[in-house]
Image 1 (cartoon, rainbow, N blue to C red):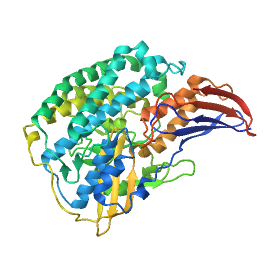
Image 2: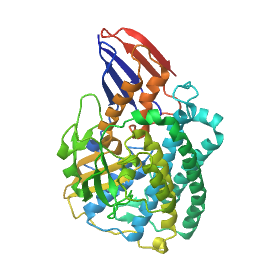
Image 3: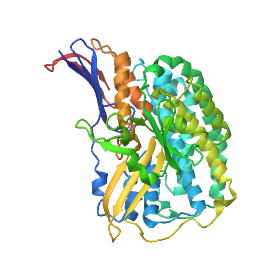
Image 4: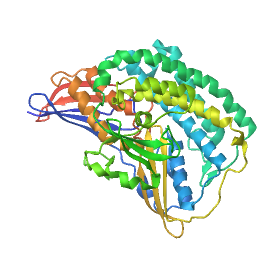
Length: 475
């Protein structure tokens, strides 16, 4: 007699999702599915709009990382214009992108995932949240709030608003940096770096406590996709696509971003509104790959900043050889990237050319197709537009960072459920681990809608006839 366990909604992620665990007659796991249960439709309702509106429109797909969509959209518009933006404009775009990465990674680590790591997988859900962390680890909670505030303040200083800034425009940015803004941002960075290094050092002491989780949280062989610099170093704004396999062999390298379609195909399934990207030469579903901080660090030869390079070397020591396989170590990778982002923002702001007044190239559309790729906090983000002779959008394809990880997330929940879930008697900690592996990827599903506080969850164990055998309710 087959049975199904449903987890709905998945908590402490951005958006609405459901997990179903399908069990056989003996209670063995047969399948696990991750369902995106909301529909957006941005690719359709952008059609007919002037291409210059795309950064503002597509930024509304997400209130957590709008800067990432703004950058990818503007890079696609730069491509439509056939312009190379001024060097100072590129540096300024890099700074706002690194500030976005800092605040988003801080949100993921401190607010969404630290309750599991600090309070325990089996802790009471009523207290296993950021408020519980505040009570038991007040200094760490304050650090998380402050670190996110520093990232958001830099976004606001450059862009005029913390959310949906309009400062990045096709051809560059709308205004040059002032000395006052430069000084204000530079004053924030030492404190941010101190917090980031302190948190990183603390987290290293926690990692040995989670050896079992690290061995079961999404350790399946996958490819890793990300941008890298021409030298093969860590990159978040520009560069080339690199694909590395689970043994550490480079499968694709120095691939121009406008050739992404040679690498990435997209499949659909009837159980989710999220697409299933895959590596085309391997086919679907074998061509599974991961993106995001874990993939970026696995692909990078070096970070290029002092403290981050030391942390990267320590990151690679988590495993004897090859790329770091466990998705549990997305948490580790985020902290390394925060250190890098703060160091790199300091370097860019101290660059003598950062005050240059030439920050925008102006042109009309000179192509009918534009592609923009950037690294969002959660992974590689792709915007692809086609326009008509009047500059109106005729076709849009958005490959969201979380979408790239879809196949990997589905495989990860299956592995975790097989390791931890006792089908005959549900316990909170078992199912929380299934949710927690999704939080490792830090998926962003909601795009425009977000929930405040603790979302309710009902978990039911049903037999084949639909009778409830056991249940848990979380409020």
